[in-house]
Length: 488
Image 1 (tube, helix red, strand yellow):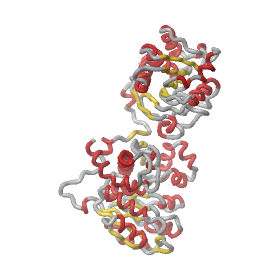
Image 2 (cartoon, one colour):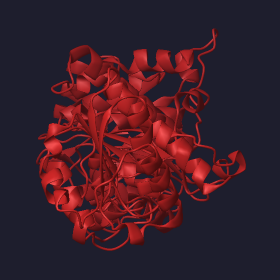
Image 3 (spheres, one colour):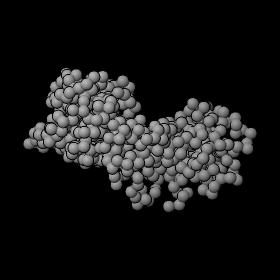
Image 4 (cartoon, helix red, strand yellow):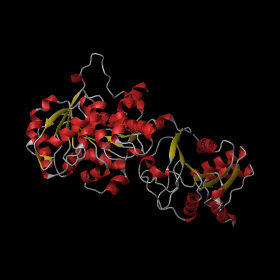
C-alpha cells in the first residue's frame, strides 16, 4: 500500500471530522509539519478548499526541508491554488496570533515518530494553537505527545478530537495523552488486515467479549449453585466498606454472601444489607485480631470465593491476621485495599487463584516505586506486577488495565470521571469476588468485573448526572448493566 494512498485516506478521515464540526462550511486553519503527519494535513486542507471552506495552511518547516510524500502533497495543494505560509514569510507570526479567528484548527505538526523535546517553530505553533481557544482536531496523535508513554515532550496540543489510524495507541490510555487526546476514534485507512490482527501486548475489551464470560443463570438454579462469597472487611472507623462490597456481591449475582467482621461492622452490614450472613470476629480497639484467623479458617470449606481488604486498616494485628489466614487458604480470592498494603509489607499471598486490585498508590507500594513511576508507563507497571506476584492484576484508574501470567494487558473501555469517589473500589472488589466464586478464571474475572463495574458507572452517570453519583448508585445499576451486556 503506497504511503501516498494511506495519506489520502487519512486526510479524508480527518476532513470528515472537520465536517462534523462545521456541516455548513466555515474557516479552518491547518498547521502542518514536514513529515507524513504534515502530508495528512495538506490533504485535509485540499479537500476543505475543494468543498468551499475558507482555508489557511501554516507550515512549521521550510519547503526545502519537507519529506518526499509531504512535498508531493504540497504540489497538489498548490495546483489547486492554495498557497501555504512558511515560517520565513513575514505573515507567519501574524497568522499564528490570529488563529482564534478560525472555527476549527487541524493539528498535523508531528505524528507518531516524535522523540525528544519539541523546539523551534513546531513548539511555537503548538503554543499558538492552544492559546487560540478554538476546537482542535489532531491527526493521529496530538503534537508534542509521545505515542507510547503519553508523556508531554515540552508543550503539547490539547485536542478536542483525535483521529488515530489503524489501531489505538498507548498514549490514549496514560500520561498527559489521556487528557490531551480529547474524544478519540480509530479510522481504518487501508493497513493490511493481517498486520492489524497480529497479537500485541494489549487489547481493548468490548461488551461482546465480556458477555461471554459472565455466567448464565439456569432455570433450575438455587443459591448454593451461584457462589457463596466470604467478605473479610471493615473496621470501626470504616464500617461502610464491608456493606458496599457485600451489596455489590449480591447485586452482581452471588448466591450467598457472608461478611466476617467485628461487631460494629456487622451491625452496619445488617442495616444496609440484610441479605448478608454475618460472622462476628473478635476485636481490639475497633480492629479485628489475629485470633480471628482461626474462626475464618474453620469455615473456609463453605466458600467458593472471597474478598480480603476493604476498610481493614493496616495495623500490625491485621497484618498478622492475613498472614495466618493466607498460610492455609485455597479459596479463589480478590485481594484489595488494606490487604494489598499487607502484601507490600511482606505478607505472602495465598497459594490459590487471586486477583489483586491496586490503585496507583497501592501499586507503587507493591512495586516499591513511586506513583509517578507507576503512572509513567501503566502497561509496564502491570506487566512488572504480574511477573513479581504471578497473579492476575488490575491497575485501577481511567482505562483500568488487567493482566495475568502469559496474557496481554486488557484495557477497559467503560467508566467515567464521576467514578473518582470513595467506595467505588469496594464495589469493584465485590463484583470480582463474585465472579471468582462462580468459577470464572482470575484474568477473565478481573476483565469482566472492571468492564461491568464501569458500565454500571456509566449508567449511573446517565441517570443522575456526570458528577456526584455515589458508589451506592453504581451498585443499583449493576443489574441493569448485566442486562445490557447480555443483550449485546
